[in-house]
Length: 537
Ligand code: GLN
Image (cartoon, rainbow, N blue to C red; front, top):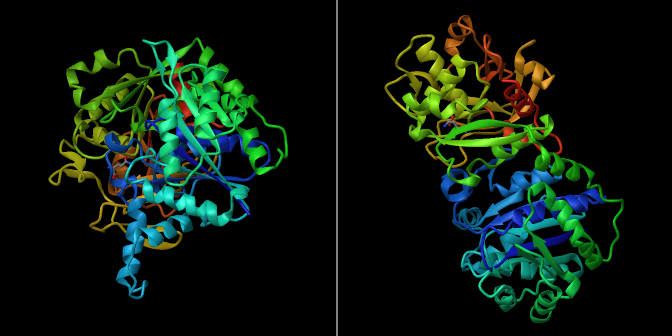
């Protein structure tokens, strides 16, 4: 039977529970155990798909088409295990399942309540779709003390009671602040947070203390004493210079060994930290750098393009250069300022996006990249904008646009009415916005001898999608005559998946999101090639 590790957070949010869970998962996997990492989010949205990136950061998409929390991206990047639909649940999803059942009469006259119905559904989630995993790490979103988190905490308490303490471990991550004025490290917030957790019946087994500096033994003892946790299970995590150092740092703090000790098991093989040491060195010591412009609506929020930022850095690791991300707010990119804003960059990237705001700035930047022969990568919305730019400025279709943005335009980008998934026809006409896009992994076939074909070194690829609109295939010949080729198509030849420019050293648009599949230990070929092109620009 699997062992379950629950990771909660206290004192403040954004302490890095996701990174902690991902690093622990790597350490356990590297020592021979089969691991699964999942996330429970206490908000009421059914999934983060309809939320603005300003609210929630990036929406991460899985192979099987779930729109999930960005922490699942960390898990994948650190463990190289593809997350599934069953690895993320929210309060909204739980309630909508329960209410659907209630309407069908499933509860047979009973009053439907948080305990036991909601908590039972949470426990079902924890155990579902697990086969021979040795460890299931479950991160609980939010902070202990939040009203929304309560049913989840109650559920994991019950779960531990039912499955037994020998199969469940509670890790609590807290902030241990340093007060400059008194030159002291403070343990009180941790004590309070653990008190809160204990009041709902959960005694943490391991406390991970996030701190700006090393915590003296006297303070660790205090945490151990007040929080009722063995001193060797009070583990510190001091801020690392790059996230790739996190597995090394947790190993040095013996987090994995304390977990093994708790479950009374031993590692099956020796941990391998070498790849992390190598990439940490490359990231911290690269002297050469390239400036890459990311032009989007949400650039002011660090987490809005999380996987993308990561994938670009991975491309840099592969090419032994540091990637400086120059974030440019598309709203402020006026045509006459393009040259000035972009003169120092050697690569331009337009990421995925929705809605009209900022699109003219993006189109102007693409025009600049096309004419100046600057390496350009357009992702999803970025590819659609590249098609609009080319239509207007090369094909001379002045009213060219996307029906997502302007109902009266000449729609070179239009709503996809239907597509096939696993042999089934799916209609894109649903009025609901949530979960109705073309989502998840789809195949594309690549044109022989195209740039993309050389980059992937493959005839077919599988990449993750998240879109409702698509390049209008009716104009394919017109585009290709003028040098913009459709170098990747869906297997039925209906949906353009990749475009590239013939007379340009590196100009590619992709309808999918390659960033979701890049890993620090195996950078994505598209990003490696893009950074390489930027390096030689
Ligand atoms: N808004 C566009 C669409 O729905 C692009 C989406 C995206 O960039 N992920 O097709």
